Length: 607
Ligand SMILES: Cc1cc2nc3c(=O)[nH]c(=O)nc-3n(C[C@H](O)[C@H](O)[C@H](O)COP(=O)(O)OP(=O)(O)OC[C@H]3O[C@@H](n4cnc5c(N)ncnc54)[C@H](O)[C@@H]3O)c2cc1C
Picture (spheres, protein in one colour):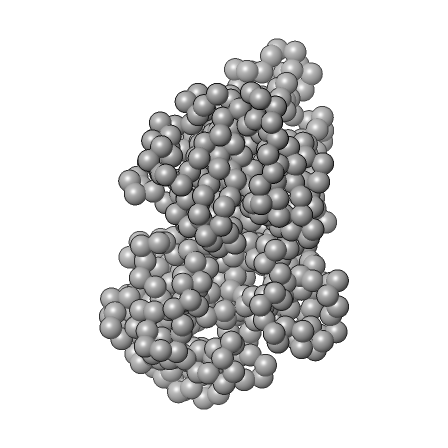
């Protein structure tokens, strides 16, 4: 198989960049670093992976072999059992950019070219010869194609529908490993090269821009960002699409549709994220929330043959997805970014056939009829034989009157590489004394000048793990300010100054600091359950032995058996992870509960 990886560099007009030259001179160091940060932020790529932008493919045979594996005759024979063999003709377009139904092609003879299409110009991304397989991560996720596939040499291919491909990777461990790895690595290449037909125009210091960039990044969708504060040509682009400054951030979707400050749901609709998800069939199991708990339930449910639908109001990953580095999750001695961990779990759930809807949350659980239904944001009512509530918790917001003005423009609720890029070399404040605050402080200390940790209590000992306290003590640029709280935020357009008060003396100090990370705990996402599910005094879901006889009789609990361990006051509805009263707020317990709940789901579904 012969391949060449090339791209048209959007920032260098007319520049065709061969990946082998990237190391030499065409890609500046700064741009390579920012791409690397983008990839790490996307969760598809780890800190330890060689940089695809600066690593010459020719010099790294093992990586190129993993990206473009050449299958053996025995492997091809196994694939042939799942697909159909057919002839191809020169110039035949197999897949067009934006196609919603995307099959997978294995080249038996001839050649397929994968083309990036931009402004009417085609650039060859790669050519697949005999033994090579087309496709990337969208084959697993069921999302539209971001490239065109055309036959450059006629011959024969094996064609597999997405369902046939999923059946193959679920049953053939060797091919599953080869194909899943290749698809994910290819998506990494597409992200690095902004192949995706999406342009985001906005300002680094604008909350809407940060939200959109995070949404696309955490969904692993490639995009090109035009920063209005730095790009002199941006105005021309805005004029071309008849967009005024008041409309930013703007997202150009598929090179045509212009969305002005779109919601995440509008972006998901435009990019067809949910289009191939059948929302109407009766589900064995509906999982609400795709944090670690919901993803674990989806992986175990789907892999054990249940028909599983997952609803996620934002992006898969939950709170864990906003963690810079999780060091206490079993099996990762050097730690793993929360996004990387949850991106893998998401891919795993899709691989086993779970259907995942993003950017559409559950708005109501109807539990008064014969069958449960979950109502979703602007969507149909989803029927469910069983439900797992995994909606976790949302960041608690301190009572500061103008807080919302600065959200995303100096005030952040997560400390990932994306936020870290916004405050390189500057002074920052982390508010909170828990583990998430400790992690954020240690992570930000690597790239900022000084980190002030503001804690209401007398110290960190009661609220933070010992290993984090030690790291903080060993990092000279972190200053812990006990019995201190933030009392004011100031700035025009973006945060410029903050005021904090020392509760011992009552003294208030003002500091020219433009970045505050709020890590002040979380409240349960249970408003959508109103009236249907028993909650405790703090709004967490009550389960199993915590339910009183009165709560069970009020819900007309049928006689015969008490609720299972993670079951709510409604038979067949379970709660797992941070949303559950009494849960230990950790990734491991969320994953454990999500997995265990599936065993109880089987018990309920058993005739
Ligand atoms: C910054 C940070 C660092 C952390 N670090 C660690 C660590 O190092 N180690 C550790 O063990 N734990 C850590 N934690 C805690 C850990 O992340 C949580 O315990 C874990 O994520 C809980 O998982 P969950 O699935 O129960 O809920 P969540 O992670 O909260 O996920 C819930 C999901 O449900 C979605 N959702 C909410 N409402 C709806 C709705 N109505 N419809 C559909 N979807 C909905 C949300 O968008 C979210 O994606 C950290 C937490 C934070 C915030």
